Image (cartoon, rainbow, N blue to C red; front, side):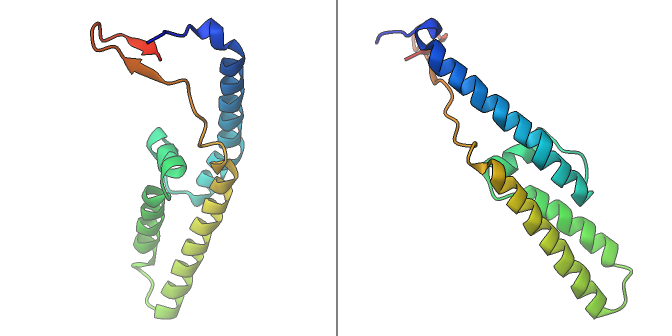
Length: 124
């Protein structure tokens, strides 16, 4: 197994770094403000992983819990239904915003493997 030094991959490393910077900017400029509009809490790394690697199930459950709490006092079934439909639409809009960054989620980072002898990480 030949070890590759990072300096052998300088151009590739710069490409990856630029991709990650672009992803970071898109998350800060698009995803986080859209999440803040949902008003369900503070944006955390766990939620970012849920968006990029999943379907947003954690955020959807947060939105639904807040909506169900809000409509507990509503007596009219039609008002409840309207509120829940609006909440669902808000989450779908949020998912559409997240799709704008989905093309960046496949950024392949430099892969490192753990050496079975010394347990250090090496580039293969």
